Image 1 (cartoon, rainbow, N blue to C red):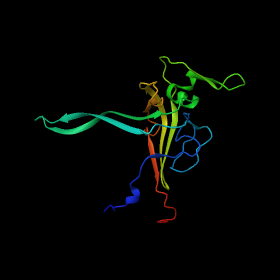
Image 2: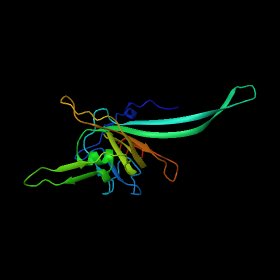
Image 3: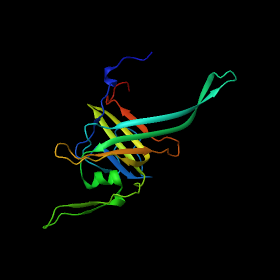
Image 4: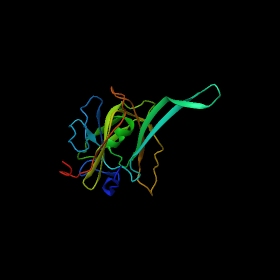
Length: 196
């Protein structure tokens, strides 16, 4: 029988001290396999994410199998899709690369005449697929979502106005890896030494 444990009720706050809680790297980069281990240097992080946080959506479409009388006797999987969605809350080089792909973003360092200059080219191309890691915390507990092969397939409306921060609403399509998994979720409750 499952026990009731309030410590297992977690919130998905970002785990960010200096860098952002969302990182990406080229597909094929060694991925973390737990909620707490250090990520390799190939992972580059973005900055702030809006207070809407991160949303994971799965979509299973099924077909019905009916018997001779027309009764539904079984459902079989027709298609499966998984996506993650969030809004980058910075107009930084890194955030624009996340949303539109690094192939569409260039930057020129600041000098004595101007600040850092970033150029975004918006066009009909999709960004290259990348590996992604989303790190969250709740007290000592840690949650990590790992996407071995994810591609930004949508950037929703970007609003430019004087009353709200400019955000980049991103949808990431998650594709299966060699094991057939599109997303891994790791949880560490942070209770070191308990039950060992």
